[in-house]
Length: 193
Image (tube, rainbow, N blue to C red; front, side, top):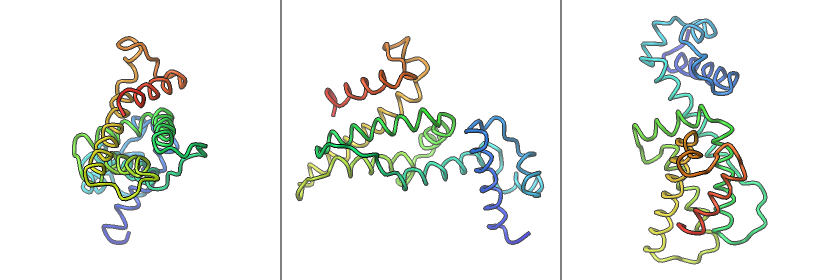
């Protein structure tokens, strides 16, 4: 095998492939299965990543980072920055719900070890860009408020997603029902954005 970085990248690439093949069901992935598919010993995989959980987090963060950076919203007929942002918020939530396992791993990893360039902050920056559409040279205060709003929006979406299984019992929203999710997001924008 080549150098350490090539070996690590081979492990990451194969694990990402396995995550995709299992639709994010990371509990089906084992270090032994990764070792078999990469022809790299279990000990060496553990040496580089210390645990399956650490390896999964590295891979999921890479997957989500690619999605965040390559995301382009579907066609939205509005020119209003708030309407466009609401439209994208619904698409983001749809992605989270369609990719529950990897989304949960990514969000929890960001919460456990926050960084200025993690997926949460990159999502907030994306919302900030949408909230700034059509704005002329905004004052520093307006930029600050738009960034705060973008962060709050990201945090609210993540919190609702992580609590999706209890929202019906606790606040009467079935998060598995897209129409109810969209109504909740409409409410958020109407009253809190």
